[in-house]
Amino acid sequence: MEITNVMEYEALAKEKLPKMIYDYYASGAEDQWTLMENRNAFSRILFRPRILIDVSKIDMTTTVLGFKISMPIMVAPTAMQKMAHPDGEYATARASAAAGTIMTLSSWATSSVEEVASTGPGVRFFQLYVYKDRSVVTQLVKRAEKAGFKAIVLTVDTPRLGRRESDIKNRSNHRLQITNLPLFIASITELTCFLNVPSYRFVLPQNLSLKNFDGLNLGKLDKTDDSGLASYVAGQVDRSLSWKDVKWLKSITPLPILVKGVLTAEDARIAVQSGVAGIIVSNHGARQLDYVPATITALEEVVEATQRRVPVFLDGGVRRGTDVFKALALGASGVFIGRPVIFSLAVDGEAGVRKTLQMLHDELELTMALSGCRSLAEITRNHIVAPWDPPRIAPKL
Ligand code: FNR
Image (cartoon, rainbow, N blue to C red; front, top):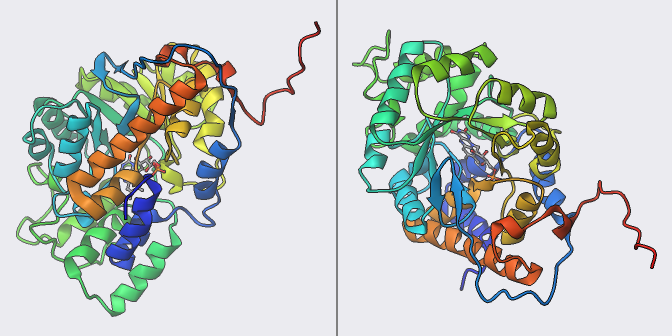
């Protein structure tokens, strides 16, 4: 069956992946209200297309932090992609480079910054979780710099992990019946990072480790006993992270810093004052605090608060070219996609991710043509109408 949109990959991935892995990728926090709202909010924004404009040529290229890319659609950091497909982050890196766009590598990737860099040219960002042990963070950032990564994406919405109840259920089921130990270990690693569960005694298999930590001086970790990693990490992620740490991060790296997880005008203003290079409006794919608004709903207040001093990006629920257009019309400089990459990776490896990026590219191009926009700069607020807009009254003749 021909795949005609990125959402179809999710259903296929669900058939293909073990339930526990699929649930880990798909789920949101608690009632999953925000998870649904990330999609529903897009559907409440409608178009005001302009007609009879020569759209025989459409230019979708844009520049992000000085890097020219083919389209305003980039790849969000998602942890442990080798659980989806053996090629994991390698496939995502190659597909993103082939599409001419930016890939963000997660701190908790199953491939290291060096391994991802070895796939060849491509503009890549590195997503950072800040550990209490700042020497670990410094080493990681230096390695990312050396491997040619172009920016640090600092995730700021995760002092603790949100409650994803299917993960909790699956975890207790699998305590009793673990049928696939390597996959199980990888899936709980992210949880144990935050849940402070010190007593897991698993051996991280060679083929599925959090590869970015392999080369680091992991302090007290007993390297002969890999089972110490989960408990080491659990104690290390820094819940006290604050704005002063953004300043510290700036002091240790010349790379531009994007803060990922801003949802309010208040924080957008502080982010600008802190000297960040950009903001990603994100609710972590609805996996952290439930009942935060859809990112597309929060976007405009963040954009306004920045007074256009830094670029603002968005992720969360982007599944259609029309979604991308709506985000741009509300002031985003580009969007990132998370789950569509994972699900297409699970179904068809690199080819799947390529197809996902191509489909979104083509859909955005078509949306632009049908709205009368020949370039991204021509997409304006007047091309959409949002539920929070005042009623439009036809001008008196
Ligand atoms: C994530 N996300 C995430 N973010 C981050 O900063 N570091 C990470 O390691 C991860 N890992 C991760 C794993 C999985 C399975 C998911 C679904 C998400 C959040 C991610 O970067 C992004 O914010 C959302 O995925 C965007 O929403 P959509 O596109 O998935 O709806």
